[in-house]
Length: 232
Image (cartoon, rainbow, N blue to C red):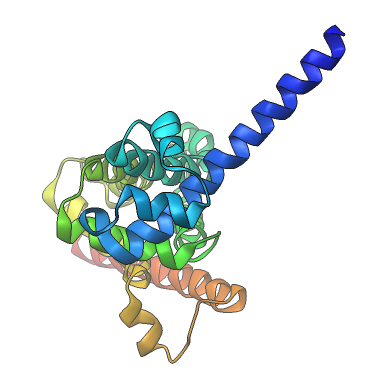
């Protein structure tokens, strides 16, 4: 009898997780197309095929659901970028790490960021949600910004600071970091698709972008190194 109860609880928990996941995925689509203000809890419930109290049960309110959608995106970002973090940290901690190793890690960071920006499920909805959130200044937006700073901008900034031989808080270091990362963030915009003559970013196109970003980044820092050497 104990085993039956345990199995029943396990099944109930699994169904609860499936329901919560379905609401989150539906909410991402609705918030992306309708915006935070334009989406109603009734509409969200209907599209997720749940009753209205289910949203309150799992998320408390529309704002709670929206924040949960952002948190889900942030968790995905952290899982995706996490494997590189220990290697970057170890390289930065060692003053003897070679310039080639630092540059290679920077390229890996950017290539991983490309895969994050162009891959995964509901990519178009995520892209539209980011754009809408910036315009509408929706609740929880600062969480997205902080995640981006912590998992992408900060490690790239530290690597670029070492490559430039400048402090991380130097204005030029920050600007160069923004310019280098901008090679990737440009593809967050729909106009990049239209300009490239494609309807969507396929895996082959994503790999092409990764290779181009690597080539451009290597060329940038080789040029910087050559310029520094000529001035000595």
